[in-house]
Structures are given as C-alpha cells and as structure tokens.
Image (cartoon, rainbow, N blue to C red; front, side, top):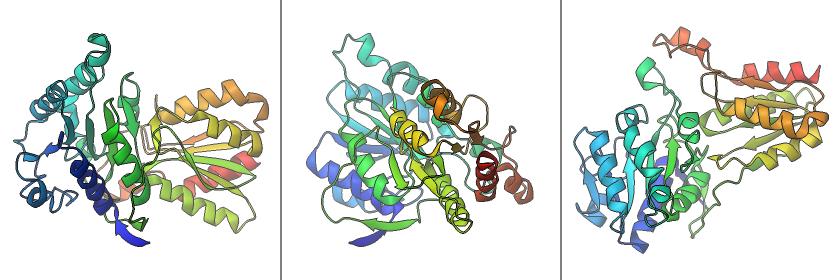
Length: 324
C-alpha cells in the first residue's frame, strides 16, 4: 500500500469521481491554472479541461450560487472555498438555498453539491482567518458535515460526499495537506455518519475530530506510560453524528473527555455532552470534560496563539481529572 499526502488523497477522490460521472465539476478560486491554493487539484485542469475545472473571481456568493443552481439542471458540483472563513460571504446560498431546496421543492430538486476547503486555525492567520465553522453548518438541517483527520479517511469520505444527493460541507485544514498515511490503490468509499474507534481502551473515552485529533493521540500515548488506557474515537462526520459509538464506549469506560478546536459556547462538544448525559448518565463516574479554544478571537501573536489553542497537555489534565 502506498503512502500519500492529504492533498493528494483529496485530488484522487475528485479525479476518480469525475472520470466516472461527467456531471461532476470543480469550481473555485485558483483551482485550475494554479493547481489549487494548496495544490489539492494539481493536474486536474490538464485532464478535465476548463469546462470542468473552473477558476472563479473572488466572489464566494456568486460561485456558490452558480453551483447550487447547476444542481437543478443535473450537475454535481464541487465548490472549493480557499478557506471556510471566506464562505461567510456565500453562506446565504449554502443555508437558504442548498440546505432547503429539496424540502421547498417538495422533493423535486435534490441538491448534490459538495462545499469543501479548510476550517479552523492554521498558524499565524489571526482572528478573521482562524475560525472553526463545523458547529455553524451542523446546526442547519439539510446539510451533512464531514471533518476527516487523515488522508485515508479524507479520500473515502470525499468520494461518498460527491456521490451523495444532499449538500455536504467537507472541511479540511491547511495544516493537514502535507500529512501522510497509507491509502489503498483500489476503489474504496467510507460511509457518512460513522465514527471510528481508532484505539481501544478501558479507562476513559476521548472523542475528537479533524486536525486536532492528533493532539488526542499524543495524549493517549502519554497516558499509556502511566497505565491509563484511553479509547480514542474519531468522529469523522459531525452531522449526522454517530452518538451510538460514543454512548457504547462510555458504557465501557465510564468517563468522557471531548477535544474540539472551537469556541466553548454552543459547539459540537456541548451537543455530545448533552446527549451522553441524557442517554448514559448512570454509566458516568465523573462529569464530562470538554476542551476548547479560549473564548476570544484567535490572536496573531504565536505566544498567545499557543495559549489559545488546546493541546495534548490539556487532554492529559482533563483525563486525570475524570480519573480522580
């Protein structure tokens, strides 16, 4: 099995699906001539041509709307945002049209569209370029939200997203595009809405997703040196949320720590905490602990940014708290 980068996994998923279905096209800023802002569409213009790999002006509202409208004429667009921070300009099309058109048309118009690009922080990009939007989009019925943590999951889930007849928000990270792992040569598709237990454990359940899942893995490795056995769950899909996998794990470990790179108010970890206490309260030996960013806009200073972001040391402290 070969080892490839996250950006290559994304490119392979899009290219493989475009070879199978001529109604699929990619549109966004710098996706064609520049091979993608993060080189996630490298070589696709040469293979598929300018009618299927389309550079746009800096107009997220415009090309998001074109994408949604084109689904009504039989197309299956992939819309790339250079960052989901810029998607705020086009969020009206995503929330008020893509998410609702199936219901508003009485089922006459499905909306098979994928909006993809990086979310959350990526180093010193400051307050307006470092925001996590998973919980924003997951709040809207009609949308599916996927946040993979590695190249293998990214390829399999993106292929599933492209084939889905509903709008999918597919969130990546600038800091993951160079990450590598083994990815099969052959065809594979991963199911949307299914979390994965990355590591079995008996003492505490740790739930996370996206690029910050690596901090959960570091914490589990450190805790293993102290004979604390952690069960690691990678959500992979935010909506639909695989709460059953989390509940069954908590029934075994009796403790739960959630790591999420997002502001602490009204986020995914808040929802998980509610659902666990409502469905598995009697199994908990300690209050659920959730770890988030500081409740401020992201700072630019690297010293402050380090304090703002949660890390594996925060996870270790939270695990020891629930163990005691």
